[in-house]
Length: 400
Image 1 (cartoon, one colour):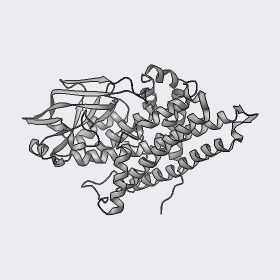
Image 2 (tube, helix red, strand yellow):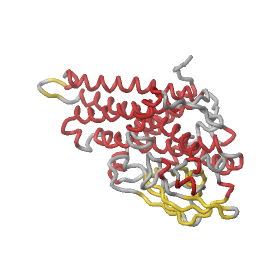
Image 3 (cartoon, helix red, strand yellow):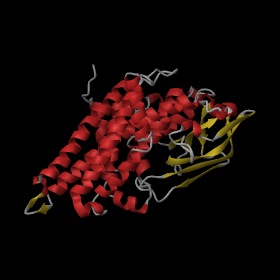
């Protein structure tokens, strides 16, 4: 039976994330959003609060918390700003959890432990200039050369690209399979920033998530030791899909934080703003928009909680995670649009946070699988064209 009650440890993680958001993110986020820069104090603060490894086992420097804790922390960080939740998504969801699941013991000790402790910042490199939803369209190659692989290619739209110390990179190791678009020719590697031939840069002019670092990773004849191949050749696509399950989960939970932020901003404003002789909280259409935010928050929350419960049971959760991500992002977009409407002309100004919420909400319906991809996935499950099968390696069983 699914139990959605929270343990004391889960609530402690939520409160810890809430404190970081309220003290470090919210007071200064407008400034960093305008300057399009990542707050340099944020990553150290998250590391100090154990937020960068709290759901990694203690044996690897984490706190051994579970997926529900990860969801709660994601919600609280996005309540502060989407850019803060993105850090959890890529560092924990898209790097640490896949390394925990697929890497060998030596790789875990070398790369997972410093990530869990916040000593090294980590990210995920799958998307390319011409390959987003079409994963097998990626062009990066990894050619075996003695005891090394030589990587060439470019990754685009990579969160933390300019600040990460280590990257989970996906590349073709079988060039014949690349010609035939056979995803069993894709492999996964852990790449260090210090490897010769690596260069990164930041992307500016984004619609939203401006306070977060987003950029590219360029690889020119990068020599990667064969010991940095994750799992085995040809398992990259499977690993990438596992990564996306974890990333999408944090996006779904985070979107609930954005809905809640929109709701709270509207409640506050509606009690301060008067039109036609009364506070706008008394106007029925304003009430309707706030009610829709509350409804969207409630059922989106239950969707990510179900996905988190499945993950805690080491059960495949791709369908549940996809549904949670799709619906929560859709509701976040709707909530943000209504929040701007409630604020009227002031919602069109950065004097109030809702215009930032509106800009930030759009990205989530694109990254980690577009809303169109998730629509097709859910239809295929219902039509019987798709089913959740357990991966060859078990999902990580985390302590609750």
